Image (tube, rainbow, N blue to C red; front, side):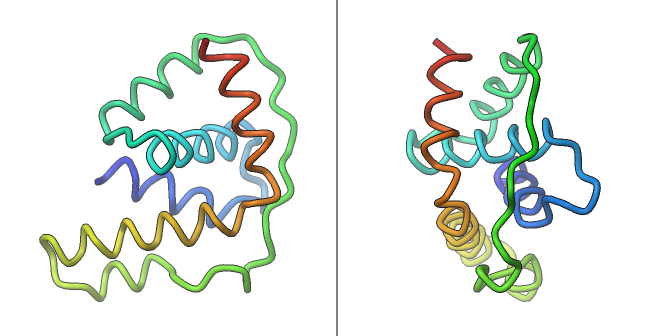
Length: 115
């Protein structure tokens, strides 16, 4: 769950000087976690494979901050254990949905770089 929380937090806080590669990796991590069912270790492997590719990562326009209905504070205010893991999953889905305008790009670049 730590990898998923890290990717979610980074995606939610993209912009403000964050490197384009960071935003891309976090969105690709969320894509693999949410749409392909990868666990945290599998997402880490995806990140490792991506890091070996030579690619010019262009900036991605983040959603407006008001697009998010959950934040890391919702996670931190939830009791540790299964309840917190479920809140992380809800947070992941919320952030992924907020980036809907980039879903096609994430799928396409994943197909190109990870096949």
